Length: 508
Image 1 (tube, rainbow, N blue to C red):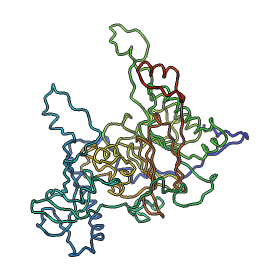
Image 2: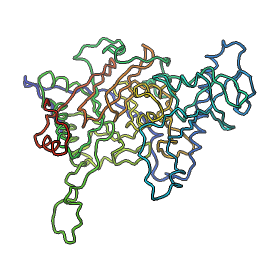
Image 3: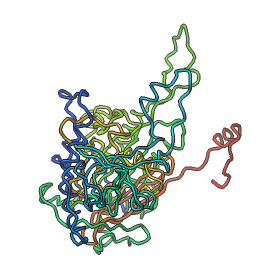
């Protein structure tokens, strides 16, 4: 039974109950049927479908972009139709030949007694070559425009992007690029009309935190009338470090109105839903004593000293009892498989049907609608993989770039594991959401992308276990703010750090 949030005046704070929908039409492509699931298909089908679906959009934008170019360069339907010294533009899929990128064939040919090199943080190098290919062939792209695009902050190219290139073929057979054109931001999703209808026009415009006021899209709403959605990533329930679980307890107390001052209780009462964006669980680790092989073992001591699933189930039960609906999205450390799209965690993991009422387990990625606003949620693997291709460290710019490319995971299946879809590419972004949530990132970042009338709020969520950051977004204004939860350093933890030779921060 739901418990009202307490207030000092012996009254109760009722949580807002905005409309909710799982947007089944948009989320259905991410759900894999266990009866028909097969890994016998070739990944080439995904690239072909991606090119077929995005080529008309890129061609239309390229024609509009270059219609005033002198000589009226034509669009060549096939890359093999290139003619030397003829100004034209072509459309295809980007492929980067990167010497530092892992190669499966080289790993298999390596001598077994040689240790493999340590994994690199980035594949980018000055020796990379950019190619554009379609169903007919491939051509190498050269020129200063390509160099600037690869090196500039907020830009870059990765394998799998569909784009158009304006230029001409050189005597060496390469294609010297003058300008580039991408699919651009898609139109805004109209959740009232459904996925078949959209509103707003996508524009290539992004605003950072310094340029964005907290009112978001300019709507003036009183604080008492605002409806908030809480976003958390990386709870890592069941970790060996005690402060990680203590932060989770502080989070639960704040969300249920049992901790903090009167203002904290009122703020917690305006939260309509909680979204857990990946890595809610951590991999259990055996204790040191349990690693020893025992010939005779009559002890009832559990093999694992902690039970992450039971601990998380208790936390969710406390939150659900306060009438707070929850959405769980799997991440890299959750037991949901290694390939995208990760399937929803079974609700039976967290208790009976009565205890999990109000709990929604979603796929990664997944779409949601809350209070008339659309959410596109991911566990963070897509941006982590794009990060390896680009020289820049700005992950918020990379997230905005995926909207401009109209693809959640452009580097899949080249270096990002995904299911081999035979006749579809569900990661194509056909509609732009109101909130684009990406979990498990190094630090919190947010930005507005799009025009002033229909912007999209991009939110990068860090690990809550490491940073204690809780993000709140307002459904009416697209405002975004954070709350930090900290746990003092334990004396035992300080002694352990001193034994290991680590520096201890006495200020904490």
